[in-house]
Length: 390
Ligand SMILES: *Cc1c(COP(=O)(O)O)cnc(C)c1O
Image 1 (cartoon, rainbow, N blue to C red):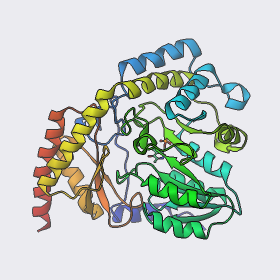
Image 2 (image 1 turned 90 degrees about the vertical axis):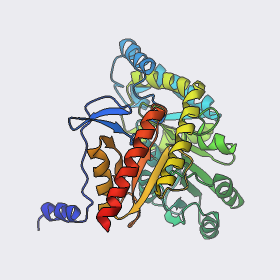
Image 3 (image 1 turned 180 degrees about the vertical axis):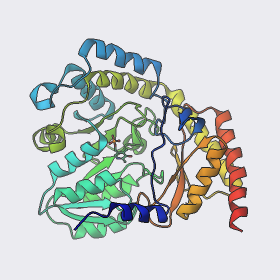
Image 4 (image 1 turned 180 degrees about the horizontal axis):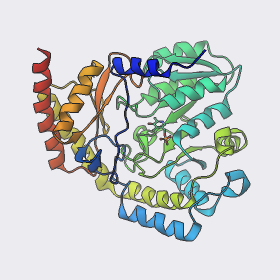
């Protein structure tokens, strides 16, 4: 018996599925230095351009001087400090929920919430395109696990009919690889009809969506009675790191008592919470960031469609170009890179087989001129790719 890791890695290579980590040698921003080269990047989740914002950096610096650099312990021991508490209160107010609970990462928030709420004898129903952390959370919970057709309230209703025990419907708010919005009005109505709860992970909605950046629930005007468990992550539009769950007093106390990824981990550095407090303020009040981002999204869609690229049904900063074959997606990404542009190819198993794509993400930090450069390069590379196919 032995581990044949070399064979496993070779197989992944042969299937065009081998992954590599580009080495970033600059802060996040439209212009980055990657693997020793300056590139114009369209692949970060820093949708509002806050990851390298001077005021956020200053808040972090001041926080470190005041509170030191380490969380020191878990929240229940002696790691829950004033900045964490203030950030939780600000996030509760922002989301219009009684309370919010800070987690170290979105992955942990999802594992924590689902496993604290469900166990054997319960049911978890998930969109089949949910983020991996939500699917992992459902499997780990020990509840009956079933995936409904993507964004399909009728498919959900069929599964709700067969559900047993406490039932939780779980969905991404904005689907991270497609950019489309969950049809929450229909999904929440189906859940409510059966007394099920709804959990929404709005990692990509907070910031870009909603009049004040309140994400998909603000976009659709939904309340806690529709979405009982609301998750946001802080590493995307907030530009920092961490995550939160917002909801009722009882929900949050249940997580404090039972969510193992909350209990058994060190709190995030308090200075990070200071930085996030500042980025929350910018995210809410600097409307121009959302307005500029929406203008870029509109222009990208027009430009890409006139080149003949196949876009997905997305009104968000996530604008995938559907290619299909993994090898072709890699070639297009490579052609762009040779021209100084960084756009990542996303391949299975991150997306379903045969649906490889280039995942373009736009940020309020991009200028209109940078977007035009992307469109020109796409036109040129797309022609090259098509002629090399022929
Ligand atoms: C990024 C992401 C997560 C994970 O959040 P981290 O804070 O990066 O661990 C969870 N859910 C969705 C939908 C995401 O896009």
